[in-house]
Image 1 (cartoon, protein in one colour):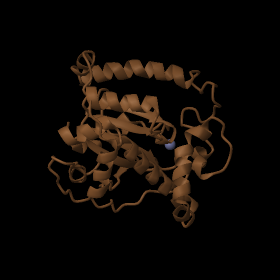
Image 2 (cartoon, helix red, strand yellow):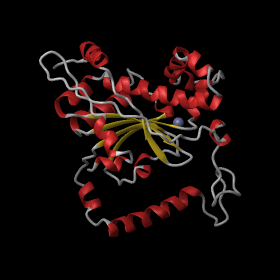
Image 3 (tube, helix red, strand yellow):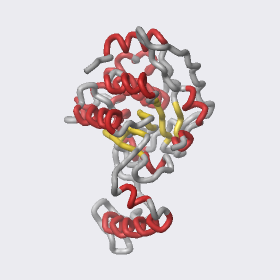
Image 4 (cartoon, protein in one colour):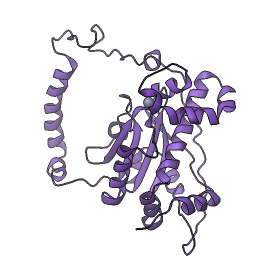
Length: 281
Ligand SMILES: [Zn+2]
C-alpha cells in the first residue's frame, strides 16, 4: 500500500524512518522532519469537555434512547445502512469481501483514542482490512497493559505491519479530564500516565493558555505512547530487521486533518533504549 494513503506527506513519512544501531549493526543518520506549518484549532467544543453526545441532524430533536422523527432510533437505522453499505461496497469492490474472508494483511497498526470522532479507517480514506486497531480512552499506552500489548505484539510479529501509528486528537475528553482535578472513579487510575506527564511538564503547561495546554498535553501523551511502543522487544526487533516505521500523529476533529509530529530520536536515545529494552529469545 502506498504510504501516501496515511494522509500525511509521503516525504515526511519516508524521512521519519528510524534505523537503529547497536554493536555489530550498521547505523544511519536520518534527517528529522520539520513540523507542519499549519495550526490546529485548539478550541474545545463544550460537548467534548462535558462528555455529552453531539446532536446530529437526524436526532437533533431527540434525547438519547428516543426515536427520531422517522420513527427509528439510530441503531435501527444503522443496521439498515449496513445492508446498503455492504451491497454498495460489493458492487464497487467485488473482490474485497471474498478476499477479506480468507484473512487480513493490514499494513498499519493504529493506536488511538476511543472518541467517536476519530474513526481511523474512515479518516484515512481506507477500507476494511487496511488497519489493525487498538483504541482506548485518551490513547494511553500503559507499559504493562495486556490488551494493547497483545495487539501490538500480534500486529508486529504475526501480521507484520509496516507502520505503527500513535494518534492523539484535539478536544480529547480524557486529556481535558487529566488537566482538571475532579475525582473520576475508575478513570483515575486509567488517566494516571497523563497526570504523570502533566506533573513532569507542569511549568510548560502552566505557561500556556488552557486550550494550548490541552493540545500540548495531547502531543506529550502521543510522545509518551511512542516511547512505550518503542520499548517493546518485538517492535525494536522489527525496526532493526525489516524497517518497521513508528509515527506520531495528531488528528484535528475540527477539520479532519492529520498532522505528523517530528518524532526522530537522537542516536544516544536509540542506543540507550536498545541497551535497556532489546531482548532475544
Ligand atoms: Zn480522546
